[in-house]
Image 1 (cartoon, rainbow, N blue to C red):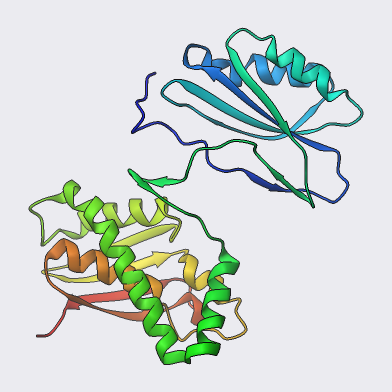
Image 2: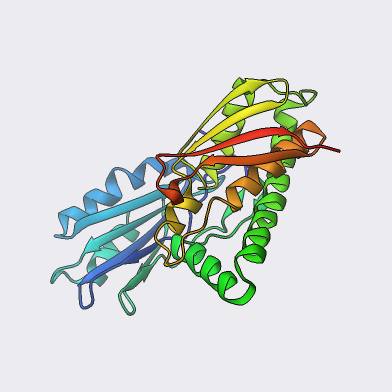
Length: 270
């Protein structure tokens, strides 16, 4: 299988939390494209045969180089002997190791995160909570909610530019199309587990399962009255795809104890 530079599988940054004092080792291996199967066969065999126990592994294929990162329980095994053994495997072009620092083990190399052909960044659930609580403290609930809505809106509008080419000339996209599009993009960016869309003629009901925003903020000391970022994302995507502004009303919310977040999309007045 050949993947070019624009479609290769990214080797994402790997960060593993380990117990303080644990004898854990990270082994990063690169092989040339012709020997990509080594990451699943000979390399792990070498690791296991020398007494290491593989706790987890990550692999990715590239245009020229395939990469693997193995987190192993080192025990009392001589690490240098293992490195020399893996380096001698035909097709292996690089071997590096990393050790925990302050309970954190990070792969020595990785690709930049990307969304489509755009550089991306990653932030965690606690970042959402911190952002919400910080905005509340500094700005008050009204401004905090508004700011998060527009954050989502412009993010959604940017996403819609990527989506647009998939459903060109379908400004009044049918629910089936919107469901596929929203599910793929919200899942790929980590904002939702699943999406269901129903309705017609520009009036839609969107059910979002596993809304990351509301699942995170339901753990906040100051729970929001509803979704702001997701409401903005949907408004940004639908307004851009349909070529006119839409209104998004939330009718059910995980942060308020609901099973899912449900939104009603209608054409904006004026």
